[in-house]
Length: 181
Picture 1 (tube, one colour):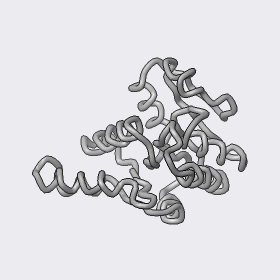
Picture 2 (cartoon, helix red, strand yellow):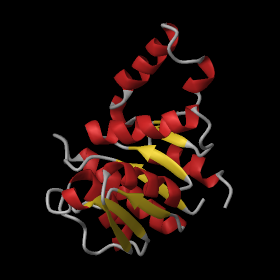
Picture 3 (tube, one colour):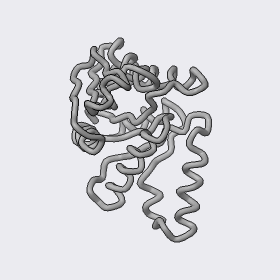
Picture 4 (cartoon, one colour):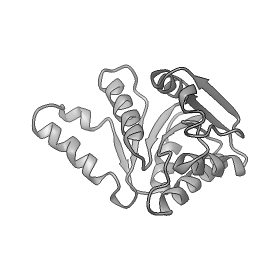
């Protein structure tokens, strides 16, 4: 396990716990020698994860479309920042750089990234682990909806197993520690 891709919000949310947990993740990744791959912004939960990792001596790789460089305010202090032409290119490069994925709290962009990487796994384009960080039940409704989609016949039982729910940082780190180098 060399690099973890973190899908998360460019906003901070209504509770500071989202940023705090993301910062703690960044710190933990740095201490574990795992690089952080993310959307490249210097704002929101995204920045908290990146800054925590950087401040603890870790490596952070950001990927941001040119159209969002000013809007999301591209992070200028990363190990590497790739500026790309499109969201599709952003997701492809984030995938290429990463050994596993985790969705932290976020909005439509986070859900888009999570659902696309799940779809790629469903279509057998990859077998990389995918986690949902269900901090304080943030993703309870989404996970319930996945089960509903299955119940209604639009998602096979085995496809529910493509995503692993983790409820805390220690649980996520335990999963990551079991992945091959």
